[in-house]
Image 1 (cartoon, rainbow over the protein chains, first blue to last red):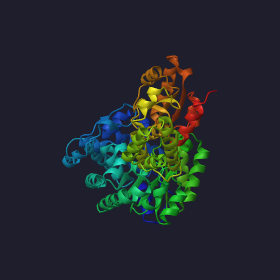
Image 2 (cartoon, each protein chain N blue to C red; image 1 turned 30 degrees about the vertical axis):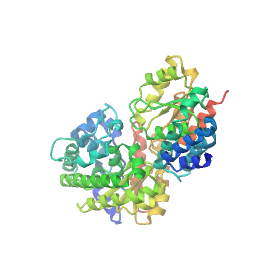
Image 3 (cartoon, rainbow over the protein chains, first blue to last red; image 1 turned 135 degrees about the vertical axis):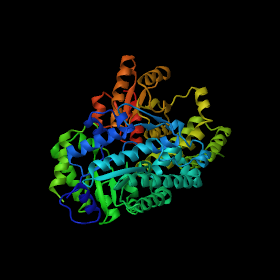
Image 4 (cartoon, each protein chain N blue to C red; image 1 turned 90 degrees about the vertical axis):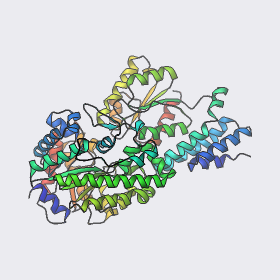
Length: 336
Length: 212
């Protein structure tokens, strides 16, 4: 099977020759290619080359354009700090929506115009041309809570949940419309799956997750699926109290961070949900040995059961020994 | 008669307006500022920390209570200074150079302040020299360093080295935390303590503030 066939078969609950392998790599990939992260995040040609090299070297079943959470905020006019060797970051003290009234004048960016979103779309195109039908090409968008936090400032958004429900709803409406449009451009460019990263959703607790975040995640997932591609949902952090809700977003693949045991995910989401993850990227993957990494992945597999894809809990961190990533691949190749 | 239990509950429920009003009322009735802090504010924020740790409270609730506590503390703070009452300890806190993530640091700062510490919050992306200057000017006994990224963790080491070069390292206890930080890393860089979460950071600060 090709990597793409393997992932698609897993998503559709069909037999696979072995476990699909889909770890997130960003700085690890840039380092492998010997490029500055600044260039990886700024230039889709650099990103695509590094992704292809990493996927080839470690036998990944996919390539991805994920790089940093600041692309959308940047094109909307948000202030972003750039670094040579780490991802660009949004400057919260100068948040675009520090004044709520600014939301009314916010417009969807023109995605055909030069910008960071355009660069991602072109990155998808470059990867799609390079891998053909061999691998999944993963596009990437921010989830409603994550992008709302990027635009409003995460600390302020957390208080908005109590202070101004109407504003939060209006902001989430804007964000979801924007991300569906962004996903559509990436699908047109050749994305065969869209990843949704909704990091801030792990902070809000079950009450606000189910009242505000989940309905918009469901809307975003449905909007992407209407474009004809499946969705991978990844929420960084501890999601143990919202696992049940995450299982109802409709995402074909739920990718859990290491703080949320896959066994709990399985219990909360039922036997059919495809789960991805989730060994601790630092303590288990970076600081472990090939033998301990294989054991950790085996433990994840046992907890997740059949409908499982191998990956780390979050990004494979810079400095992870190559033999440890190879150990993950070895486990994936030897099991199904 | 001012009701400290109601003030405690107002902070716990994150009602800033009510918390400020009840504190004013208590002060007007002649209650000692330190009693208001020790009998209402500290226990309320301890309870917030407990609820956060056992996942009854989440980040919105914690920040809401922290805002109420700050509102309540506002009229009390000048009275404390005027009467020469010392805080439980003085902490300089910040997210290290190169790292703009501050939510975890803010949670720790809020609980430290709620625990009776004076907190000098330097914000995010803080250069080592700024920590040094803050220690020199404030006389803080604890420096709390936060990092969310593996790539910014080395800034924790360089901050400790800067404190050392400035000759103030022996005056302060350095505590570190953040998602990728481990006890092993804390030991490697010569930190005095590591905590896995915000409530444990307050307990650690209390322990390190005790006279040897």
